[in-house]
Image (cartoon, rainbow, N blue to C red; front, side):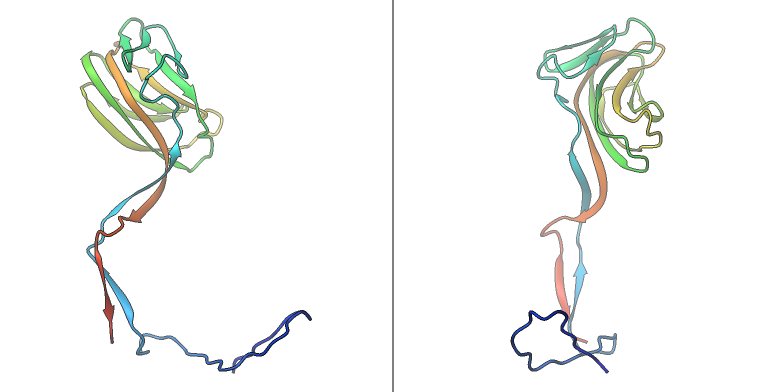
Length: 182
């Protein structure tokens, strides 16, 4: 049996032609079969300011780093040196998609770090690098670092991006749906 209740005293009107249908796999109602859809990453807003290094601003540069000609450049002097900026990435368990480009590579290694404990891959060649890193330490996850390794990185960094990874979503118009008239 089904009941219809009206709460409160403000309803005025009438209701007619109510029907209740139980939906099961045996019900002869059409369903949609989705085929051939592609998926893409669902991402939050950009968390990096001036990731294209258009100006010498927004980044804290340790010795050996400079910003010029649309990139962050490292001359390899010193050991572990970084270029960094503050960002809102301090919730444990959130995942972030990062990407950056290495060019003019000469020697050494660098890596991307979210906070102090979320270490990215070690890089030692030109290319575009993309990876996901999960926030694990709330006390140190408020900074984005690109760090040179002990041997001293000589090269340039550009197009830095950090966005929260929200999962997968369907690419619009990438597949087709068809009615299943069972």
